[in-house]
Image (cartoon, rainbow, N blue to C red):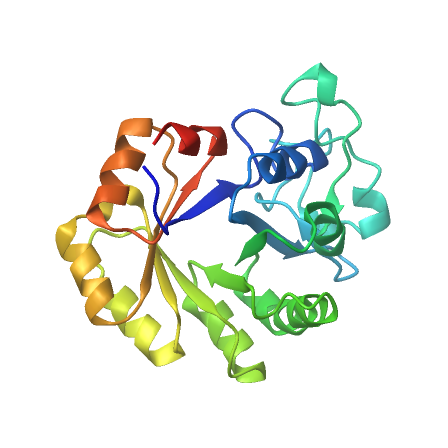
Length: 240
């Protein structure tokens, strides 16, 4: 189904490659996605690393919290073997490295991760990287915790923000979007219906649904009029 909706790869092409690795991002780019969703958090020396979990165990051969290790230490870990032996030796990436891998064509949807005590350090570092790479205007910065976006908004008035949401009641999501001047709300796909789409239209907000892996569901959401869909399997967009 053609249309103007955004085709967004979740942590790269994370359904067919280990998430947040070079192969995941390269495959997403090869599939002509419009945008790549990824997660950023701080290392102990406050470098921006691209990783979802606060702990290392699920996707690396390390143990402990990401925040406990320097970037140099994190770079020594393997974040590919957990998925498949063919990906052994894939390193944890920095945000700058990912930007270099994906090139200028594909936009970013960057989710801020960490604890509330990290926001005042993470926000300016994220802005620095995005501005240095001329990515600020083409990136949506999102978070489930509005306080993180508040920290970002204090520093820049025009950062494109997205409100991540996982509650069936979206009243507070609309409120946060208004107060923060966000451009988008990103609800869990099961909470999206025609009324949700209409409410977003009324507020002039983009509606981006996550994480949608079933082709029939993608098709249904596109017919409803969502503005973007995040999927682990971006290759399935071509089947819609």
